[in-house]
Image 1 (cartoon, rainbow, N blue to C red):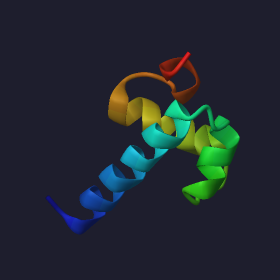
Image 2: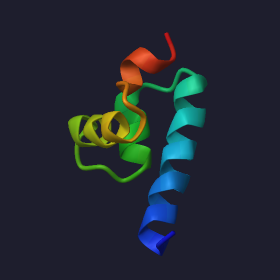
Image 3: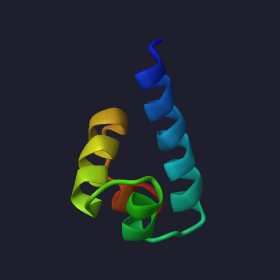
Image 4: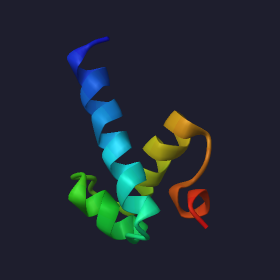
Length: 57
Protein backbone atom coordinates (compact mmCIF):
# COMPACT_ATOMS: atom_id res chain seq x y z
CA UNK A 1 0.00 0.00 0.00
CA UNK A 2 1.39 3.37 -0.96
CA UNK A 3 1.48 6.29 1.44
CA UNK A 4 -1.09 8.15 -0.67
CA UNK A 5 -3.47 5.19 -0.53
CA UNK A 6 -2.99 4.85 3.23
CA UNK A 7 -3.71 8.56 3.74
CA UNK A 8 -6.88 8.31 1.65
CA UNK A 9 -8.04 5.28 3.65
CA UNK A 10 -7.38 7.11 6.94
CA UNK A 11 -9.34 10.14 5.70
CA UNK A 12 -12.18 7.87 4.59
CA UNK A 13 -12.32 6.20 8.00
CA UNK A 14 -12.44 9.61 9.69
CA UNK A 15 -15.25 10.63 7.33
CA UNK A 16 -17.27 7.52 8.18
CA UNK A 17 -16.90 8.24 11.90
CA UNK A 18 -18.01 11.85 11.47
CA UNK A 19 -20.95 10.88 9.26
CA UNK A 20 -22.04 8.25 11.79
CA UNK A 21 -22.18 11.06 14.35
CA UNK A 22 -24.57 12.94 12.03
CA UNK A 23 -22.02 15.56 11.02
CA UNK A 24 -23.23 17.31 7.85
CA UNK A 25 -21.52 16.23 4.63
CA UNK A 26 -20.37 19.80 3.97
CA UNK A 27 -18.66 19.94 7.37
CA UNK A 28 -16.98 16.57 6.83
CA UNK A 29 -15.74 17.68 3.41
CA UNK A 30 -14.31 20.89 4.87
CA UNK A 31 -12.74 19.04 7.81
CA UNK A 32 -10.97 16.66 5.43
CA UNK A 33 -9.71 19.48 3.23
CA UNK A 34 -11.89 18.98 0.15
CA UNK A 35 -12.55 22.12 -1.87
CA UNK A 36 -16.23 21.27 -2.28
CA UNK A 37 -18.71 18.81 -0.80
CA UNK A 38 -19.23 17.39 -4.30
CA UNK A 39 -15.52 16.53 -4.61
CA UNK A 40 -15.69 14.74 -1.26
CA UNK A 41 -18.91 12.95 -2.26
CA UNK A 42 -17.33 11.75 -5.51
CA UNK A 43 -14.33 10.28 -3.65
CA UNK A 44 -16.63 8.67 -1.07
CA UNK A 45 -18.85 7.14 -3.77
CA UNK A 46 -15.83 5.85 -5.75
CA UNK A 47 -14.34 4.29 -2.62
CA UNK A 48 -17.44 2.81 -0.97
CA UNK A 49 -20.03 2.62 -3.72
CA UNK A 50 -22.59 4.76 -1.86
CA UNK A 51 -23.05 8.48 -1.33
CA UNK A 52 -22.15 9.95 2.06
CA UNK A 53 -25.61 11.45 2.50
CA UNK A 54 -27.30 8.10 1.91
CA UNK A 55 -24.95 6.04 4.04
CA UNK A 56 -26.09 6.82 7.53
CA UNK A 57 -29.80 7.59 7.26
